[in-house]
Amino acid sequence: MKILAQTPDTAVLAELGRRLELVRKQRSVTQDQLSEQAGLGVATLRRIEDGKDGRLGSWIRILRALDMSHSLDQLLPEDLRSPMQEARDRTRRRGRPDSENGFTWGDEKR
Image (tube, rainbow, N blue to C red; front, side, top):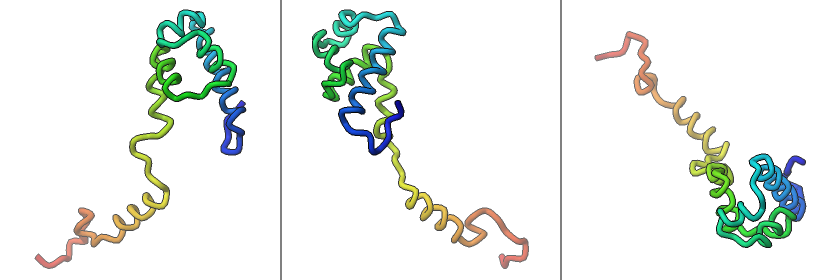
């Protein structure tokens, strides 16, 4: 299932739990093993996989235990620029005199 902006929170948690369970099983890791590696109780891991727990701290521990903490950076990228700001920056760069852009026609006064 693709998670969209209008997907209800409960459905998002259920889908993330399903994906977590899939990754865990693909790696041949039991719930007991993963919960121990993550420093969580087995019941907590079960609730997360069932889509009934959404504590970010628990997810961080699990992703670290699965060596997937790099995916956390995708939640909120460090350099999040808006399309409007990028358009403004492009306009400013284009609005500079040619000599500031490194281009000259060759007939400038020295």
